[in-house]
Amino acid sequence: MNIEDEDLNEVISALNQIENLLSYMEKSPYTFTLYAYHNFIVKVGALNNDIQKLDSNYTSRVLLRVLIEHFTVSYYILFKHLLDKSDDVGADYYGCYLMSEFLKRTMYELGIEGMINAIDKNAQFINLKKRLGDDFNDLQQTDLEQIYQIGGQFDIKKIQSFILKNKLPGAFFHTVNKTVIPDFLYLYNILSSYIHGGPHADKEFENNTINVTQDKEYSKSLFYLTIVNFFILLTSIDTDFNYLGVYIKIPNYKNKS
Image (cartoon, rainbow, N blue to C red; front, side):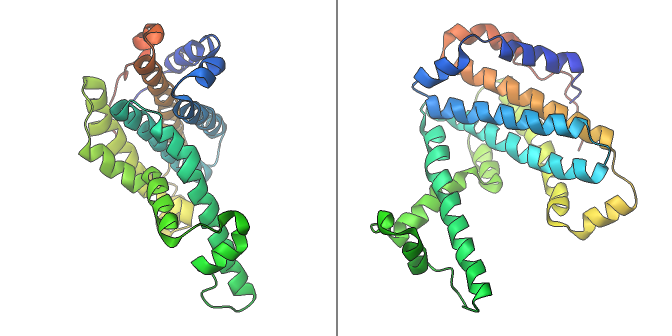
């Protein structure tokens, strides 16, 4: 996808000119979904700004991997909302997903304490309940599994499967689901080595085969699409935002995989 600076600046300007957006989001019946998605624009924008300033191609690969994951989760939030026409996906994001992160983090801390104190299998449900205290007395193992299951919908592999099994009408989503998302997931897979310190990244970096300029182009494209997808979300909720439809396009898409 070839996104020119004027393309990106155009959608950023359109976003910034939406009057009383935060107030609208607060009063909307889809508050959680709108807030979750809007926050991804801020996060993806911050990542893109940092990537554009980089000289290190290794660092650009690391941040690009993070940015692709952010974009994919934001796209899932849009996609799920368009299918369900409810605020459930946003509520799940700030509900079970947030809780699952907290519980997994606490369980991991128990495991670390087990290492320190030479306690094997310290990260167990019974110890988790003790750590959480009286507020979680009613928590059962089945509750924990359900929280993990609902929160797990935001996992990249789950998102990939969900998009494959569910369809939305229109040429825009056909192009995104058949070309854009697969291309970026292909790249996401390759870039995993950079996140985990793997040998593939080591060899690629050693041989200087990484083009930081291309990473910057990928990053800019993802930021552009994140904003455009927000316009789709807004127009699906309220016809007052139909004027944003002029920005809902994928300019000069070219498959890079």
